[in-house]
Amino acid sequence: MSNIRLRAVCKNTPQCESRSHHLYCPYCCRPLLETGPAAPPVHLPLPLHMYRHPAERIGKSTSVHAKVVAYDDTTLFVDDCKALGADAQRVHERYPDPSRVLLLYPSKDAKPLSQLPRSSFDTLIVLDGTWKQAKTMYNALKHVGFQSVTIGFSDSSAIASIPRNDASSESHSSTTHNQAHGEPGESAEQPAAPVKTLFWRFQDVGEHCLATIEAVYYFYRDYFNIYEEGEYDGRYDGLLYYFKMQYDAVQSYYRERPDIAFTKRKTGSEQYIKYEGEEEINRVE
Image (cartoon, rainbow, N blue to C red; front, side, top):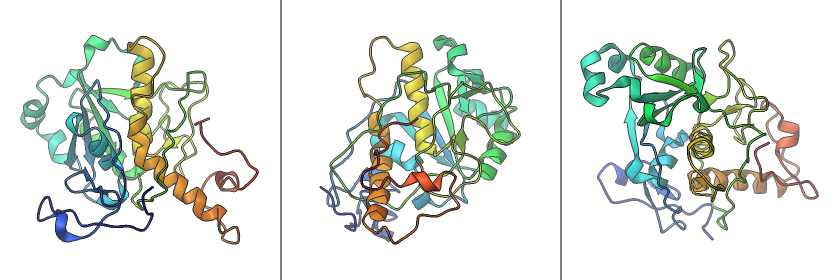
């Protein structure tokens, strides 16, 4: 069991040595075994490109989580996408056929994954930033030929339990709110009952607006349901390893301190903390 307050300095690169961290180094994206067990590695069937807005602090982004647990299949870029979107040559150097790239964003013309033949794509792009940042990034990329896609995973599907782990450590990094089943004013085709976020930080765009790593996880759950055969075996649950660790730590902190009120600014804050005698949130419902 890892210590919630234990920190270590990564020495892989000079940049890593700038400060200590919990659980993993956000610069080289390697676990810090001195602070707790490493997440089980995850193999992704579709390469993942994460674009983190430069104004988004690395310590607040869980795009790093995806790189740590799916190191070989995840590529991180720090880019607001404005220059990329305006430079067709640069786009084609990175993506020779932009039409084969999926851009996960709930735009008006985005399609559920279920409407796309598996043979029509080979890369997934996810934007990481606040809603305002992500919308600007999307607007910079929407004309380059990518296929906009939304998450079609809903309560009518086989919703997976968020992975439990024995570690009680908390990394205070957090995800931002740039992925969801819908954005105010932008309505893509919606499932009847979209999943709800378990993210603990305040956001004002609704309970179905997912944290970045949640969106990544549910995309690959959606992918499994659509393109794979057999019963889901938990193969992508490790994507939520660090997120679940933080979630558990937040729950434990407030349960052990009932005199401290959880923020009322969060949608559904009254039901968010599960005190003794109440059912723990183990499923996204």
